[in-house]
Amino acid sequence: MSSKAEYSKECIFNALVELLQKYPIDTITISKLVETAHVSRSAFYSNYNSLEEVIIEVYKQKHYKYFSDKFKDMTYQSSDAYIVDFINFFDENDKLLLAINKWNLIDYVARENTKASISYTNQYSDPMIRDNAEYYVAFKGTQIFNICYLWLMNNKDKTPQELFDMIKYFDKLHYQ
Image 1 (cartoon, rainbow, N blue to C red):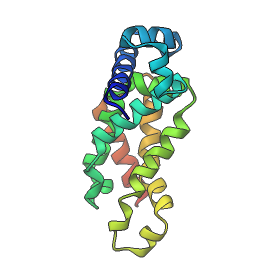
Image 2: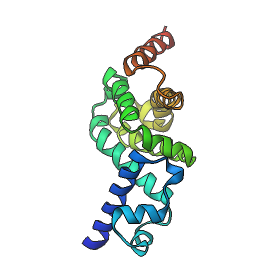
Image 3: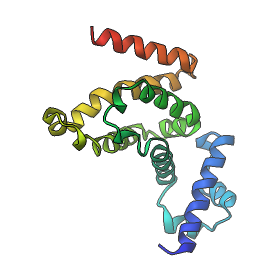
């Protein structure tokens, strides 16, 4: 990709993030996006086919930036830090995640999260985990993701600390 195309893509990406801070997703048009990004419509369509693609890319990059190397530690998914990070990620990216929900892209996001987590399961010495990585990740990660997602859909009706305490309580019950 040429540096001009990369620059246009970055401008579009940043413009969407900026617009999501100010406007509901259903009011953001491609025209408004390219105007805010200071790029042409043809620059937009050279990089993306739809607004959904931009939303997905923004999510993937934010998720990667937030969680990139944390899964390399095999104990991460069983740690309190994992729960806190998920809560903080949802809290800090609430507008983006609400946009993803509004565009019915939450299943795509869940699959992306699973793929990212699976890439690290080959480090586990337990062959049951390595050979059934997708199931293991669904077991460990889906519960917290779904609770955080519900929290977001309930307008963050609990503080992050209350949410953390609830997850820990449920987790303790689960293993009794």
